[in-house]
Length: 210
Image 1 (tube, one colour):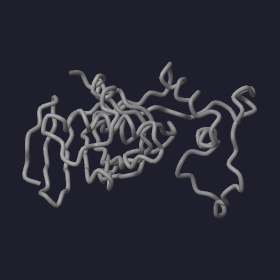
Image 2 (tube, helix red, strand yellow; image 1 turned 120 degrees about the vertical axis):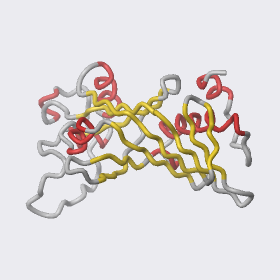
Image 3 (cartoon, helix red, strand yellow; image 1 turned 90 degrees about the vertical axis):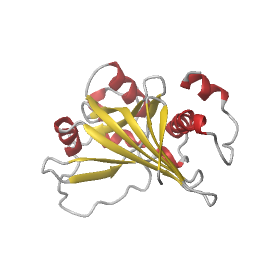
């Protein structure tokens, strides 16, 4: 049974204990849900990568889309962000997800590609252009730039009108799409009945000591 079919069939709540053959499909079902549900605890994983200076860099990102068949995760960034250079230099990273509700942690080892133009980027921009977050990708200053004074939060988040000419929106946007191809997943379930852990590669669980 394909992951897509599993995702369509499993619409009920998670069982208290799932069988070993259900772990991988259920992980992808939960990832899919997180990409569309702002309240899902896996919506904002931590991305850990190698900095240009060789140190570990970690930051929270927003899971925007999931391709179950390709086992691929998507999130957005500013193309001028330091992490873009870091991920281009070392295009292997880890995404860490924790859900208190599920009592699950997953650590996904991923291969990274940065898309800065093309249909995928155009579609991503169309999905955010009328949201408050669009302003983040229209700033004249790149992320991490020094401000002359403390930033003041706006009273009301601005919502951009996609019908306006692009030059009225502050110029070309800086949104880039980060594609993360999942190479393996380290799954950990915490339970009073006993913890379980598995390394998932090519859909076959390798069971580990928690």
